[in-house]
Length: 118
Figure 1: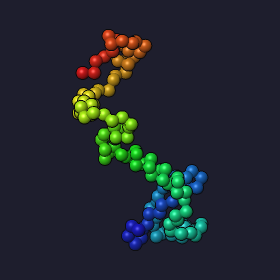
Figure 2 (figure 1 turned 60 degrees about the vertical axis):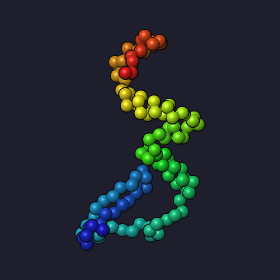
Figure 3 (figure 1 turned 180 degrees about the vertical axis):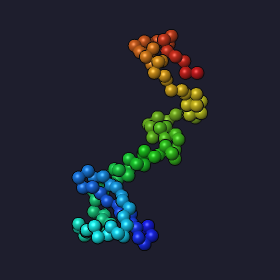
């Protein structure tokens, strides 16, 4: 509720599945109809699908809590100096390659044709 004369209604478009919300006022109340009565909350959804989506969101946000996530979820056990070299040195110095550099190196093999990443 937004005071006594307004409310935010959250709804789902059945044709697209899109969830949206709209602010309505007491003066719009006569335009509303209840299409289907039901429970406020239903827990009869697919549990496996919920678990899959929850895990996907957890993985998507995991880097916020663990900056070394790639190392921790891999089957590789790096040595401490390797972690320090990559995460403390190389990633700080890394620059994004330019489009011009990529075009200039296209099709070339060998150290002489490559830019340095200093």
